Image (cartoon, rainbow, N blue to C red):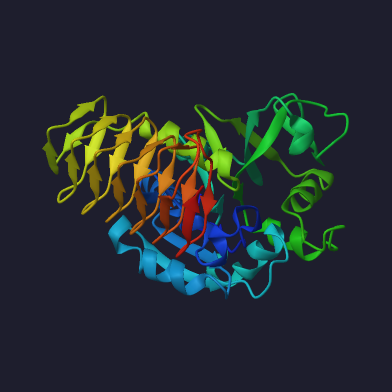
Length: 357
């Protein structure tokens, strides 16, 4: 088989994560202090795919370009592809047709995370003779997903959000294609939501008696399009970190797997891992609970936070209530004036200031 190319779709608007995504691309929201998109690029490179196209939207493309660069930091070469409007995954694939050319390729949604990457899927596709291959995972609520009906190790039908699911196997945002998918996508009409659906393009392959194979996800998978999923992905990734205290610990208790970056300081505090604390951050007279990721130059003083993500430059000061299950954007200010000490839950966009009463 000809060498595979990679295609990462990063043009989504992230409407379910507003207000944070009013000022930042959802694919750059960090999980364990690393943008979600970077994990997808890593997965491609680990699978031996180094020629990667990234589809971006005009609104957020410049920010993503700046973060990724030319791909050399990842061991890859990146080509930028602008999708002029949010017209669906199949439309995004068509937008990349010139980049793909005659090569088989992997399509990966830029806000997805898979614990074990995609190397197994890529190897199976390389060794086989299928026209497409998809990744599936059992889910408890298949009616919320695109669902595959499988017979004798072949997908025979794809149904989007079925009321009566034929299986519990949901489509994960990773697809392997030959260029035959372009003809199928070109023949589509917009769906009820005005988009060209990738599930319909794959179904067109099936309807023409072409072979669509599948693999089952090994390990966890997360679509980080909503707050709860981002926090869960953060927890799952943090479970894998190893303790590394490169910063300064003064009169404090640090327990479990904690990554303290160079230049960060923990003073008169308790930090319980797994947790990561970015360079230049200050934790003072505070408690940092498990499953928390603090970006660079974050200040937490006189406060308690757990199971949360705080982006660079934010300050949390003298908040008596525990902040938990929260996502704070860049340069956010959270402080307490007076009031109760019950836990609070926040999703706050960049450059905000909050007084908790």
